Image (cartoon, rainbow, N blue to C red; front, side, top):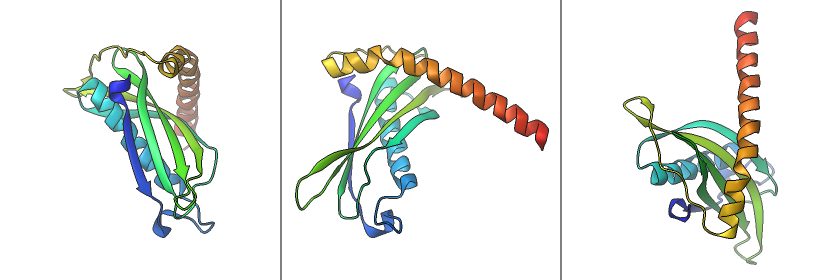
Length: 161
């Protein structure tokens, strides 16, 4: 798992923020998808696509002038899919104060010739990696249930329009 760890840091500037002076959620989500795709490609060593953004929990606002750091790591693998955890921290650069600002889980699929490609299993080593890997099955069950619900909604909307 540690070989997939990917870190991205950016300075939060006024164009990155909303009228509250905090980072746009959509901007942060783009950063999350970007860093997660790099971690997924490092693991698969194949092209990858985002299958789902399973969750993004915004925990603390990220203010203009802060540094935002995203750490992504593949936490679980299936045959061709992988779960990526992204931890987002903010740092007040003038004080050094840090906060965990967001946590996100995404699913990526490796692709080869336009089809899902087999990937290796991920190997957890540290206590944190083992915990993330062991708790992934529960998240996977929630993901499957949510996807079924989304498919039902899509069918409803298809019929309604």
